[in-house]
Length: 205
Image: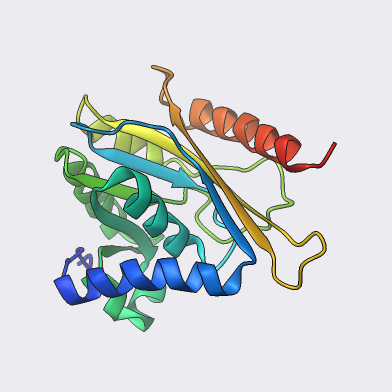
């Protein structure tokens, strides 16, 4: 049985505060580049899974720009160790289990409500930011196929850089994936192009 997301007001407020305060304390500079309008649409947010901070980065993107009911897919073994995250929107997926189908259906169902957003990391595991190309598993394609026709797919890239600082800066860009082609191959290709663009933009000239 999957662990479904809950939204307990105290924990939602706590993680909103922690995502803001934690990022501010652990990074020398945090910058976001996002100009999407998600009004009236459920949102699937796809990001690069490179660190422990990923969920909090996504939480901050939502607080600043999207203003949706936050949901994030987590590996069941990780969520069971941190079950309090369930109270702020986390739900489980157990790879290699029959419940994977139930999780994908549950996720698609969430994406029929324009108030909802779901964060997924199709890489399936934390991966070095230096590994390219990024490879996606096929679950994202099944989620999209069962979601609302009004679904917006957003891609985000978060890149840390130290330069001359003790603590890294964090630079986050968000764009809309607007292609009608929504296979995992198309998503993966678009994501890798976006990743290359973000890296090129970040390298000082």
